[in-house]
Image (cartoon, rainbow, N blue to C red; front, side, top):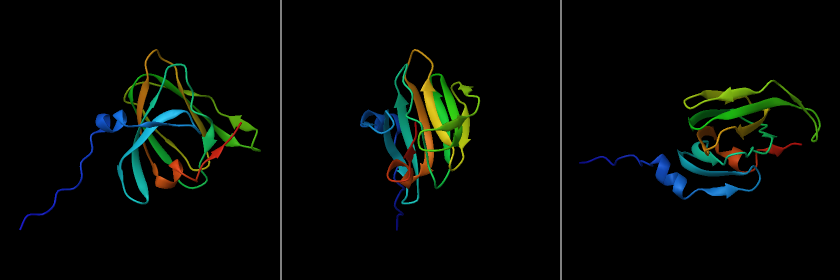
Length: 133
């Protein structure tokens, strides 16, 4: 009796069907995961910046696959204020974790789209995010 193979998804084919998330301004789509956790591939156009936001529940892990970016992080004050930390410049292959409750905004600093992976709770794409600023 044969066992069933697990589903396999190709990152780049998934990206071809990605749509723009109007709340944060990136093209993003789910690649794989389950009800609790997902892996997403996203693309950020040149001279664009993800809308600053945070997630009250759960951390996110990012990996820059292509391009150059800068990650801005900080602590929320009121809905309109953020205490920003010094930003970090990112190159292809760089990875980082954004802890739960940390305001974050990824900025494309290069001439080509930034392509990145994000590992996050599935709720982060839906109802578990707070836009700031």
